[in-house]
Amino acid sequence: MKDKEIQRLIEKETKRQKGVINLIPSENYASKDVLTALGSIFDNKYAEGYPHKRYYGGNTVTDELEILCQKRARKAFRLSEKLWHVNVQPHSGSPANLAVYLGLVPMGGKIMGMTLTAGGHLTHGQKVSMTGKAWQQVPFGVDPKTEVLDYKALKALAKKEKPALIVAGFTAYPRMIDFKKFREIADSCGAFFMVDMSHFAGLVAGGVYNSPFRYADVVTTTTHKTLRGPRSAIIFSRKDKKIGDKDISVLIDKAIFPGLQGGPHLGQIAAVAVALKEASTPAFKKYAKQVVKNSQALAKELSRLGWRIVSGGTESNLLLVDTWMGGKGIPGKEAEAKLEKAGIIVNKNTIPGETRSPFDPSGIRLGPPAETTRGKKEKDMIKIARKINRVLRK
Image (cartoon, rainbow, N blue to C red; front, side, top):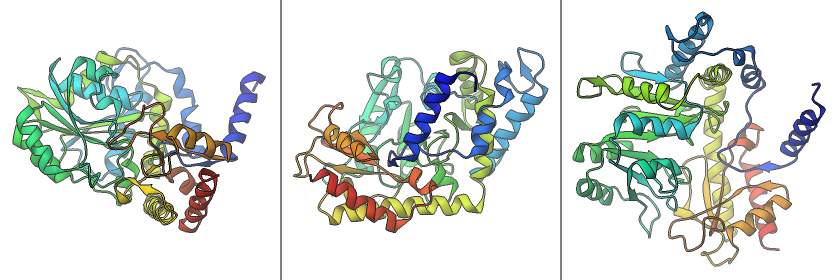
């Protein structure tokens, strides 16, 4: 590379990544093939519009690329082309979620989504997000005693508030979601049912987490977490769902372009296609199973060492550790800093019943997707848990 300053930073970040234990559950290590596609010559092309309906010439090959990516997305999640439309153009997860609301929910309408402290995402209708400014959030949390979803309470809330759309999904909820019950809740109040599977998409592809596709109207996901792809996103929408005489897939496509974005990032789409092919292999299914095993081993050992694990365990790619309210008295910000100094990267995180600021909350969030990519197994998680314990108790 001629730009020595950037080359130096790339080498510096490479060294940093190689020298730490990465337990941030929303991060992973993409393959060389994914990174090669991401930086490919496709980045030179402008392709506003959709396959065979572009606003620029010279898109014969890009049409082929986008259609291939759509096909691979359906294959990875075992979907019928007859039933599911796929949009692979969202630049990231936030605009993907925003596009769904823009397409399906009237401005000022109600979106029922999980609170941040319970494990929801900013784009599930939080006030600081555009999704909470353009629409009203109907917030739901978890049972304060069990710290898991109370579906009976959710149904009562939905019937009372009558949201236009209900979002199931999380950024910091460690348990399996019962999508059938969410479907029943959505049907009880006439709402669309959307699943944001960004965190557990790779686990769904690997067959170790409940699939939302049997029950959801729309499914969104990022592609860089458990899917091990580039930073991008996908929207899946059912072709048999309508608002009036308009297919919801058409409304969502229009919300992405021209509603929110211009030309798609074709290098991203190429890299997503590579990642989806990798996610359809037996090796990836083995990886997904190991992620869950590693999560549970990490949670079990930390619990044995005296740390309170939110909800008592995990069934996904992540777990939450109560470092403050569980009797240890260590703020999440301090815990994160101590661990980073010791070469273990986690993130501070709010927990159910949060009493502190989001900038210095009561817990930390951690998970093994990245370290599982590096080949670590249960015995390694036990060693990591013990190191975490030693560092935090100093």
